[in-house]
Length: 252
Image 1: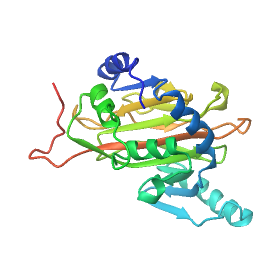
Image 2: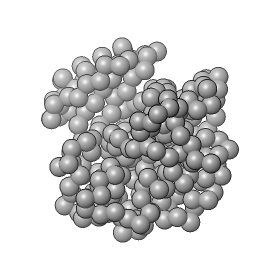
Image 3: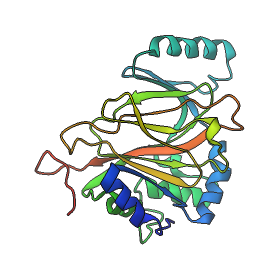
Image 4: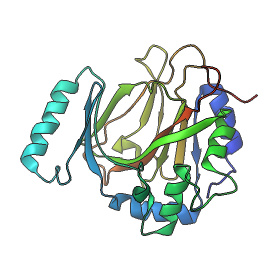
C-alpha cells in the first residue's frame, strides 16, 4: 500500500525540522481510487469557535439562508480566536470505513489501525514510527475533509497529541489556489514553511512537547475562489499509549 523509496529522506527531514512531507506515498492503485472517490464522500458541515465544536445536520449547506447566517456568525465571532469552518467526514465508526471501492475500504481500515480486513507487511504505524522515531502510540480521529473558499482553519497547536498527519488527494493543484499548510516559527507570527497540498503527498508533523515547549503552530491558508475544485485531504493524529511514565517514548 505504501511506497518506501522516500522514507529515508523524510526521516532526515523530520529529525532536522520536526516535520516532513513524503511524495508518492501510496501505490498507484490506491491513489487512483482515492482521487476518484474522495470527492464523492458525504461530507458534513463542521464549525468551531474557541473550543465549541458543532456539526450541522445533513443538507445544512443546501439551506442557503441558514448556511449564510451561520457562516457569517462564525466569521464574525472567530476573528482573533481559534476557529474553523470546513466540511468533514469522520472514520470513527466501523460503517464509515466501508466503501464501494475495495481499495478505499482497505485504506480506511489501515489508517484507523483496524486490521480485521487487511494488514500490510508495512503498516501506517510502521511508517510513522520509522520517520519520527516514536513508538508506543496509536492513531485516532482520522477525518476526510475538504476546504473551498468558504472554509478556514486558524492558527493553533494540537495539544495532548504526539504527531499529526495529512494525506492529500488533489490530483491537480496550483500554488495560486492556496490551501497550503503553513507552519509558524517560534515567534508564532512568521511563517517558517508552507507545504502545498499536492496529490499523493503525506505530511507528518511533531505536535508533542518533547522539547519542553509547544512547536509547529500551524494553519491552512485560504483556498481561492478561483480554484477549480476544493482541497481534499485526510488528517489525524497519533497519541501516546498509556505507559508507566508521563512522557512519550522515543526510540533510539
